[in-house]
Image 1 (cartoon, rainbow, N blue to C red):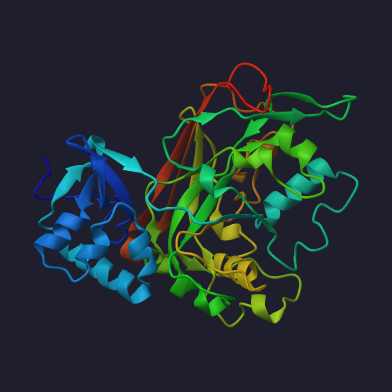
Image 2 (cartoon, rainbow, N blue to C red):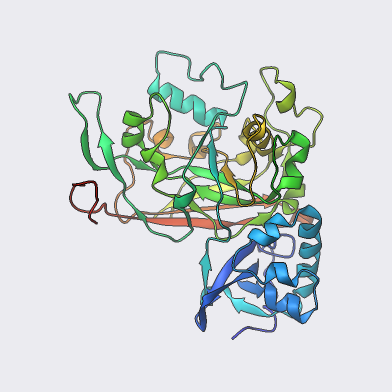
Length: 398
């Protein structure tokens, strides 16, 4: 049963009144009725019930099984609803977080993954091309990205089955088929599009179109990827699973975390020039744990390309934006050895890699007003063994 209101939050709780991320949940007594919730500490506000009780003009948007209607409503509505949610914190109704089931909070329209950390791209270049320049000639001129598979974006807590595919080591004469032997993580930050657009969105349109921020683990099968990615880029080595947080933190919650990106070393074309725009970086502090042990703390503030630049580049050719589009930053890495966002970098390409049964958890926070912390919902995934047997007759038998 819902509570009237949660207990007073402990000092420093990253899910206080300055955060208020949105998600979708079900309860044990209504497992077939997903509804919108807002996290407050270790409780979940039933947004639809609160809106109805207070006669909100936005009750219909909040009485939906996904966030998509709210996402599509636009920034003035997002801000109005956020203000209303704050006023509802004193009288609920709330559910204990431990007693609800969380779901992927929005229907993913398209998924784009970028490659925007200079430290990550440099490290990877040195591993794969030790005798050449680590960065490709285009890297400082545009945010490199690729279109991923929206249908395999899964909510945090979903188990990840070890993928299978073709592998070929440099010393092998022919490729073989089997489970990935070099399964990796990629600690990333995702951006969720709300308001659609029929064409290019400039740097200054970022706030009008992006609703919120979430953590992403874009799992990567390095051996499958290394064999298949020339010349068209990532495919089966990336498309098997992308884990996203169950909570989308509104973009406006990160105003205090705005920071200038690293100094540009090359002149930018006008559509990517953010020199006159508000600071486009975000001071997000990410932590990566494997089986409960911290292995890295990547700083998002070190990302060379910003989310606003990624959005501008993604649409400059006339590509449309749809409500529910998700685009991710690419692996977040910093300059220090303990700030690397994937095992490929942490082990210099030598492994060890993820084993069956391993559980990976990403968490993050950002500085907020008055010393508060702004939290991002965690992303967790556990590796399950690959299915037995090889595909035959065009089918795969689990």
